[in-house]
Amino acid sequence: MFRFGKRQVIRCQRRWSSTVTGGFDLFGNEGQAADYAVYRPQYSANVFSLIHQTLPLERKMALDIGTGTGQVAVPLRTKLGFERVIGIDQSSEQLSHAKPQEGVEYKVGDAYSLDLPDNSASLITIAQALHWLDLDRFFKEVKRVLVEGGTLAVMGYSIPEVLHEKIGVLKRQFYFDTLGSHLPVGSEGCYWDCDRHLVDSGFGEVQLFEEEFKSVDRHWIYEEEEAQPRNGTSGGPTGRIPGISAEDS
Image 1 (tube, helix red, strand yellow):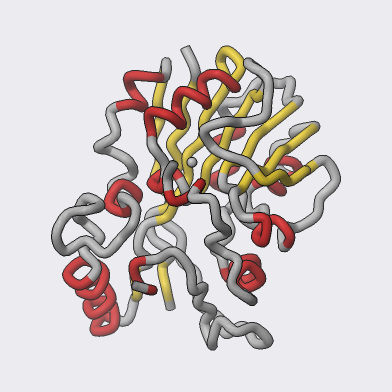
Image 2 (cartoon, one colour):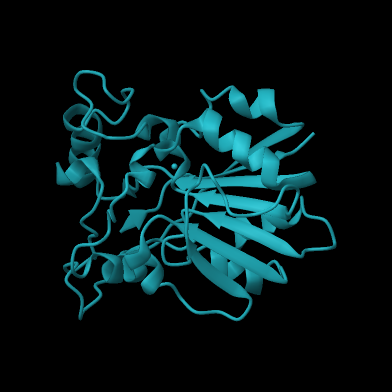
């Protein structure tokens, strides 16, 4: 059994030349995006309930950055009731496997240059992707597109905690001692192409939140989920997604 560790929500109310926008499709290998659509963890109703508390009554448009196959974009429409949701991702292959939903549209795009007018979105979400971006450039674009009083919701999940004691120890040793997940990107012993340690810390080291936004709330949600075999895909018995991870290095 796995405990899909501390999922975080950072909500910021207004007062990708990164790997994400590298010019090629990081999920373009055969079967990769299809497996992602099946195995990527979903965000619980508790996450969207927290976001709901910050939103205005009028919910015309929401924007989901790094939308992948729509794990967040669809609930923005079905759970939060936005009239229009736009999911943006660099990967056209990912978007080709995105779940269709009335009121949700998917576009290939750049997180640093959003094809939207100023002050047009009440909510911008980014799930398990902010650590791949240049934060200064991204926040500048977010502030341009958000309406006054709008919300930026940053979501992610840290390392899953394996409840089997011996396996759990091995998992953490591999994650920290082998991959160097606690180290800054580019430093000796870190095998990530992104600042993975920012996710595990809840972006606590990022002062730009407090500098750029009127108010910042941080929340941790603990959820327990049993890993179930899923047949019929190439991901293996518990579902593994080959991709842009240090574990594939």
